[in-house]
Each structure stands twice: as structure tokens, then as C-alpha cells.
Image (cartoon, rainbow, N blue to C red):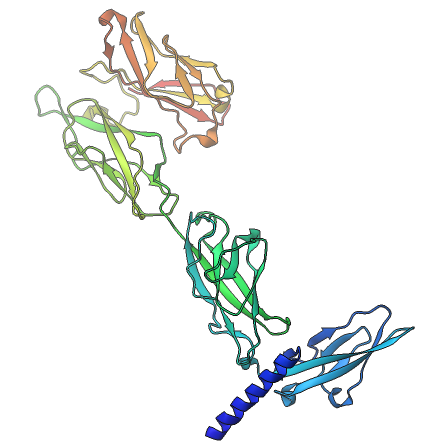
Length: 457
């Protein structure tokens, strides 16, 4: 066994000397017949292979293509010199080709045949090094410096190679020549929401271009929590139905505890899981963190209230949304009127006017500035003011509601409504505002039906 090792080492030393003495084209021992070795290109030239010893393994076509014709295993580790005659109508010349058939396992290769997996955080600045094992090809024989380049998967030149620890002087250079390790850098800022991973192929080649090895590399763009949750709606409105307790004094209202009020929902562009909380805890309602469901747990002390809900994500670092406003209207119903869809105006104890529901077609909101309807006044001294900015409508002090922006059915929420709150000021009441809730639902339809107005009381 010792003699075998010594002999093998001597053979490798001899092959090293041969390779360093002249430029050899390396061929794997297991290439199939028909493998292109070299292509001579001349002007009106005719080529002839002059070595009869190797004509059973190689052939030279008239167009100058030198190719294999048989299994090269018998030629393993044997330096081969082929003589080629080139003839033209006016001259002739000779060429010499130096070949070496090697065991593929001893040729240029990477130590990780299954490829490498690396990662880089999104939003990293250009020039950031990809977290990846050093890239380096190897061979049993010393083939000198190697050239590395990305041959596949690098659309838009997102990545570049460089000798480890050195800067890139010219990012336009597509290959790196070195005897050491190679690292990969990102040339652009990456966004995992745009593309979460890249699959590349890096090729290592010796200086003669004959000995090559490919390495598959997957680069994952890791998520950075850079998007806060956003609610589906600008604000939410829920009607909470109660009934009159006939056994109570003066028609006391009854509210079903632990009943579901409604549900809010937010989404996160980073794909993180979301949970919900009330900005200010209250004894009136709680919210289920996992689902956003609001549940009634207490007795209301009025006909309306406002809650604020915050959505949190579970990313790192965790982010939270801006508070969304949730308006609750507590509607008292009589047991005897429950089966009736449209009933008489309810009895109220505060200056609250009934909610109106007015249906329109999408065409009614085509013209910006057009008056679509007018709020009713109880006295001539009343003036109106929209409580919160609304992208679709404006309210004049006279109560005229106008189109602010052309209505687009597709841009409206799932309920296809335009909701807004109005504050009414009665100048005959010392100039003080009665905080009245008039929630207007403009139902934008695609039908050509006549506009209808119904009063939900």
C-alpha cells in the first residue's frame, strides 16, 4: 500500500510538471463520443489529423471541429500530442494540440456538490456581503489561478463576485481571477416582498478555459419588519341591538352580555401574524386579540360611543398600526317589533337623529362638485359640518352634500358604502353644538335603478 501511495504521488508530481510546462486541454475520462474538443476556424481551410495512433479516439471534420469518437478511459493520465495540418489553396501550416485525459473526480470541482445556501437581510445597502460559505473550487492537480463568474440567475446584475476581503474596483467586471476564496456581494438593495430568493450558478474555470466546475447557490432575502399593519377600513361602524325589559321600570333597556359586536381586520405586508388591542381599555367591550372580534361585556351609558383599536404584528422589531376609530351605536328595540324590518322612529333621550341610508348609482358620483342630496334641517338656524375628512364627499354648512372625488366602485370597501359623521350646530341654542350622529351610507350600485331613499330609524 505504501508503494502505491508513493507511486501515485510521483505520478501527480509528474503531471504537475507537464501541466506547468505547456498549456494542456483537460478532458474528463467519461466524456461521451461526439464531445467537441476544439474548433479550428480558417479562411477556405481544410484540416487533417496527422496522428494515426489516436485516430480511434479522435476525428477532425473538414470544417475544423476536433471531437471524440470513443471512450477515453484507456488514455487516462496520458499526455497526448495531436498534430493537425491546415491547408489552404495557397499555403499550409501545422498545429499542435496538447490534451490530458483525467479522472473527473480529480479535476476541478467544488467540495459541496449539492450547492450552497446563503442569506442577506432585505434593505441592506449595496456592497453588503452575502452570508455564505466562501466559494472556492479545488483540484488534485495545481491548475493555477481560477476565474469565477455567475453564469445563470443574476438578472439585472443584482449580485457580484469579488476576492474575499477586497473591494470591487469596477462593478462592470463579471469575473474574478484568484487563487483564494471568493465571496458574493449584493449590488442593489433587495426587498423580500418583491423577490424572496435567488437561484444562481457560479462557474469556476482554469486559465485555459478547459477545466470547469459549476456550483448552485440559493440566496434567501430575509425579511425585515418594515411595514406596519394597516386596517381594511378607515373606520368602522357597528349597530348594537338591545331590547326593552318589560319587567324593568320605565322600559329599561336590556343588552346581551358577551354578544359579538363586530370584527375589525388588518393586514401586514410583511406577512407577519397580527393581534389586536384596545388603545384605552373599557368596561364596555373587549377585543379578542387573535381575531379582532369586539365583544360586549358591560352596559352602555348612552346611545353611542367610540373605541380605538390598534393592530400589532409579531415581526422583529414589532410594529403597530395607527389607531382605527370604531363607532358603536346602541339601538333599543321593542320585543313586539323585532320581526318587523321597518319600524317606527325609536324613542331617544339625547339629541341624536336617525341614521339615513340613501342609495345611488355609480354614475351619480361622476362629476366632482355635484350636489347629491341635502341634509334635513329641524330649524332654519342649523348649520352642518363634516366631522372627519372624507375622500369622497364634502358637506356645506347649508347641509348640501357634494361629490369631492369621482366615485369608484372598485375602490370602496367590501360594504360598498361612503360613511361620514356630521356635527350639527344650532345657532339658536347659544351657538353650542349638539353632538349629533348622522351616519350617511351612500350605497354605490352598478344598476340603473331609480335612486331610492329609505330612513332606517
